[in-house]
Structure formats: C-alpha cells, structure tokens
Image (tube, rainbow, N blue to C red; front, side, top):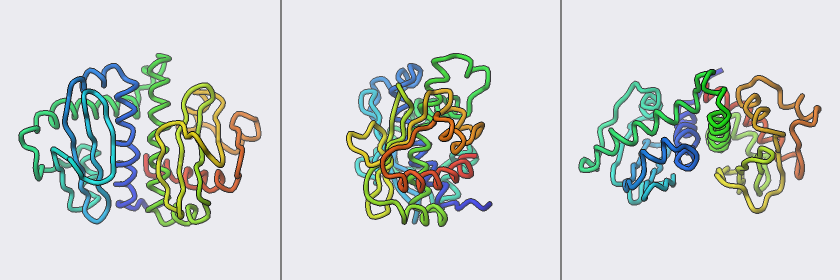
Length: 252
C-alpha cells in the first residue's frame, strides 16, 4: 500500500508532534527539559501545512499557523519534513538564530524522550508508569493521526465524507480521553476529554488499549467480547474506525 507523503507529513506534525504538549505534562524528564523555557518553533511545510510549538514557562501548546514563532523551520517539500522526523534531514532556520540553542539542545532532547515512549524498548514497558505514559501518548498520537488521514489521505477522506458534524470520544476506562471533532467533514483533534460528544468508543483498560494500538488484538473481536464499548451514533464510530485502520500504515 502506498503512503502519501503530504498525509504522512500531517500525521507527523499533528499526530507525533501533537503529542509533545501531553509529554510535557506526563513525563518528569520532559518537564525538566522545558522548565522555565520560553521559545516557539514554527514548522512551515510548503503546500502542506504549518504549525507552531510554543513553550511558555514549562507549558507547551501546538497551534496551526506560524504566528509568534521565534524559530522558523521551512521545508520545501513534505518529504523533507518526513526525513527530518526520521533523523535524515536537517533544516536551516529561516529565522530565530538567537534561540538556536533551544532548538539544538532542549528540543532535540525532548524529541528523544518522545521517541523513547512511542517506540519503546520491550523491557521498559515492564515498568507500570512507563507503560501508562507510553499508552496515553500513543492515544494522543492516534487522535492527531486520524484527523490528518481523514483530511488528506484519499481513502481517509472518503470515510470522513460520511462523518456527520459532532465529536467522537475515544477513551480508556478510568484513565484518559480524547476526541475527534467533525465539522463539514473536516476533522480536528481534541487533546482533552470532550465535554460534549455524539458517540464514544471506550477501551476497557490501559493494557487492552496498548494491545489495540500495537495491532496485537482485533477491535471487532474486542467489541464482541465487551472489551471495547461503542455508544451513541454508531455510523460516526464506524467511519472513524475505517480511518483508524490506516493509521498503522502511516505510523509504521
């Protein structure tokens, strides 16, 4: 199956980098790296997307657009951005040379911490707290990736065209929840527990969520076993699930 590079760039920007704010809340190591830091990094991917990661006194946000970016990293193609994610390309900043030490220091170390949790050593997962953080971060990555694929990938857009306006809540029982918000068939990630939603898919616990995210168990079988609960507007969840099936292709 072919991967669309533009879609992959959006998955990396809004899925992978979209989990960095949550990383700064969950990981003590990440908290120390950004403690007292005040800087923002803009990623400008030509004819694809742009977003800014902002760090203010240890808090982190990701917003679309480049407003207020201290450091601006341009990418002439989505392929170059994807190569940067893979560690095979180094962009030259368009501005922000006075804050370059943050980019090459704390931020690079922060991405290393993120990689540690998203592509974990199996032995590290034996630690319950590491397992919890890894699973929750993956939930946030998947939330952003579903939206990126639904908005850009040809097959994903077809599924998104059937999703009515409203929010689909994705949750882990007793833990955390995110949302996929649909409006006019455009999907937007909600990186917090949505106050209102039209449908919900809930995983019974962290262990099941982790196995589902890793592709070790089948979601349809889990629904039949009662380990995944679906409620509300079922057609919303069905179409989000169709997009979810393509997430592994882009995150492989």
